[in-house]
Amino acid sequence: MCNNIRMNQLRQEIKEEAVKDQISDWIEDRNGIERNKTAIQKEKISKNEIVYVPGHPLKLNNGTRVHKISSESIDDEYKTICVRFVFEKTVKECTVTLKRFKSDSLKAIEEFLANSQSIFQLRNIDLNYI
Image (cartoon, rainbow, N blue to C red; front, top):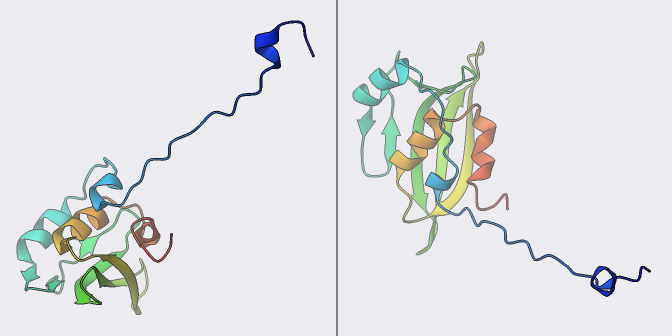
């Protein structure tokens, strides 16, 4: 203990954590891939899915190609987002599902993916992963 009474007091700092529940909170500022502009122009959009035409998939920064983004309602508050993709230098199609709020749009998911480094960044916005 020192003679300075102010130094003897223990203080616990309260740190506030930012709650990131919107997709726009997670979007990073990266240079977009030029080919994504044509993929977005030629995409086929319906009520609950975005399908990219063959030859023009949405590309991520690590070379992963996204072919389809679809959604399915779980209940009144949540929905399941399904993303079909192919890793770079492979032909096997993979699928990843994530849980999001019903108010989130597929275009917001598309914008997030277009700015993502890899498909594994989807766990940042997945409500099941928290």
